[in-house]
Length: 205
Image (cartoon, rainbow, N blue to C red; front, side, top):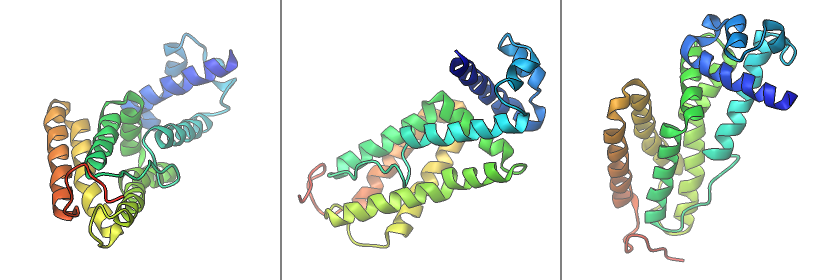
């Protein structure tokens, strides 16, 4: 029961932090939204800062498990078609998963206040994506799917515009479907430029 309450508190905190930010979130209001008194929050989290750090811990675990990371690398695709499919699965998850969207909003709001949020924003919006796709592209080169090139530079060139379009969806949700179409077109253009001359969807191995 205590575990369920802690989870409910974290989910309510994610909702409130994503709208009001850390400074604007009031523990009394948070407790009231859950039908608790203020002490009901502090029974599980000794301070607002402790709640904040527990939420960041949960965000990291949730994101890594569902989206992937350099530490939780998705399987290297064995065809160019599967690479596009992998990309679009990741894109649809990060755009439509409510908790990931709110996490991104929290990090965007708090990256200028909190050092840990800053580091997580840098990782999730830039360096983590580049590192993960560097490994993916290295694996695809080893399978003969894309031509040999600097995998880190390819990863940066590939992920930067996709990340920008995902942030556009957060700012202007009405452009989401257009952004998704643009990302898929970009992904297919990318493999046309860098892919080896095989039948699309076919592997050398």
